[in-house]
Image (cartoon, rainbow, N blue to C red; front, side, top):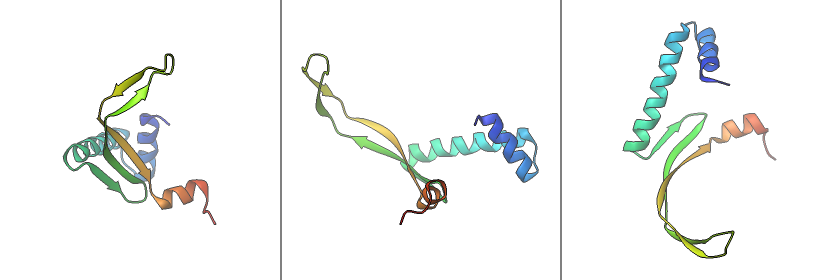
Length: 94
């Protein structure tokens, strides 16, 4: 689903214009970015948690030559789906 399709769906369901829905989506995206930069995590009830995660430097191997290489530390983004979202999409696990 594209951003335009999401905005159209929200506009129809909420009763606002597509332009307003697109603006709301852009503001949500901006909020996620700001909170991840400032706090390092953002919890959206019913959806899940966005987190920044720092990985340590490590030694890996070049698959072609088998030669050891240094892999630097870096920050990655991670999304963990909420239990309610998992159960809705995948069905409750027994």
